[in-house]
Length: 349
Image 1 (cartoon, rainbow, N blue to C red):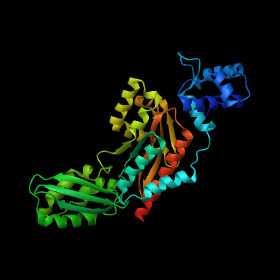
Image 2: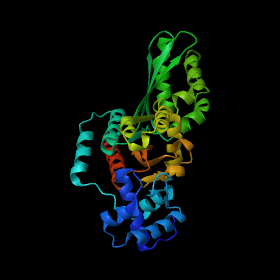
Image 3: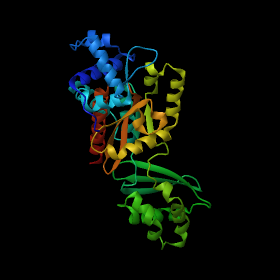
Image 4: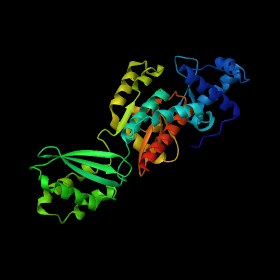
């Protein structure tokens, strides 16, 4: 993002205000900056610079205090130009790796544990979306008769993920043809992406035996459900809600209610993550306040990065107050994303 250039004095004072506000959540005054940060300027000089920064929109002046607080624009400048270089030490990296190493070979379990680790280490709300499956390549389909009219479809993709769907038949299942239908489905569909399957299914199964038609017709009717782009109906895992409720920003009952509402409305979170998806391919993305383009997120920052399992990709990240330790959280989100991708990739090899 392009900013108007601040001079060194303005940068130093803006950085001091933001770092202090991150620590205390209380407005920062010129005299405090002069004493604590020993930046070599008098309180009067600092006040003048603060006035300029406020006029330019980098800080704000709450009416109940003589101090200043950062604005979205101020945080953005801090993240882009002023904060310390994001970096985790080797001990922190090893701790995260060890926690993921102890997990089974189940990708679903690894994703859940990654979310828990992310919320524990950052002390924020962690959100991890399951990979979108449109580009997933079908590896195998299994058909299992649950009852005389209920069929369990088990779908494995090459990344190691497994999706299950239960289908209801109008008439009783002909058990004797299940094996032949399963064989035909695998023969004609394995190696295709879910997107290709949905667009060509009817064409591939024009000619089937009469006794196979009821099951094939069921697949045709529910192709979008069976080969949907999600592994689960609940497309996202969110953990660590209690972390954010202890932050000073949420002592206000209205803000407390807003975060509860946000956590309960996972569709909004998914929508926001999807908006960020194209930007998260190669780097950690930070969206601050109104940059999130959804009113429910105006009081928060999102720090996200893409992770991958073979050919499919999901997003992980955190939701927290704008007053967060950006450098530390960016490094954690980036490292957990890369580590999760490595572990999931190793299982897939």
